[in-house]
Image (cartoon, rainbow, N blue to C red):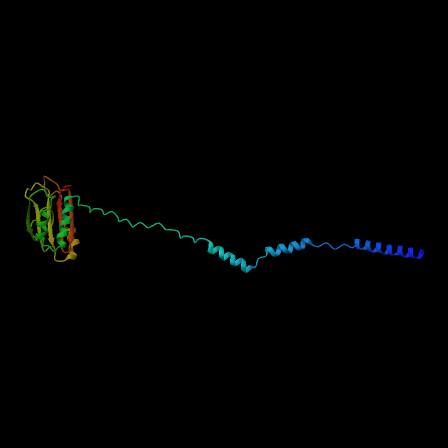
Length: 217
């Protein structure tokens, strides 16, 4: 009987010892953080190809930017056309008429007739053909030479300080020296009682214009 009890006790002790060992052996804790990290990494990591595709989609979905509209260019404004300045004095007005008539190919007589019709001339004019050796009113000193033919025009009343000439020369290249001769011998006070206010001269081709007169502005 004692042996049986001893065996039972021994079994009980063995069983209790075995159960204690089971309680002491615990399962190792799972590395939850590592699992979570791997899950997160898998969620965040996106393949490069998919990222590029998404960027392309976003670009295509963006509305196309409108090109900047440039303001319409204004047509260039035409410069204001200023009226041609009219000659201010009697002498300059006659010079303009002379050049226009000479360019038109008129003779010395025809040119003088045009000049006498200018509205700035307020007197009745007389015309006289002149040649080398003739007395030319308005000039002092030596005889005027160097022209082929000429026409003088002046007032019928001798007290008005006005005398004009249109000369024709043999050579158009001599006009400058001929005008210099006229200037050097001209006398604005050829009339004792009155004096001309201006001396105006010019040339066109082989024709020369020369006048001494009041300004008549």
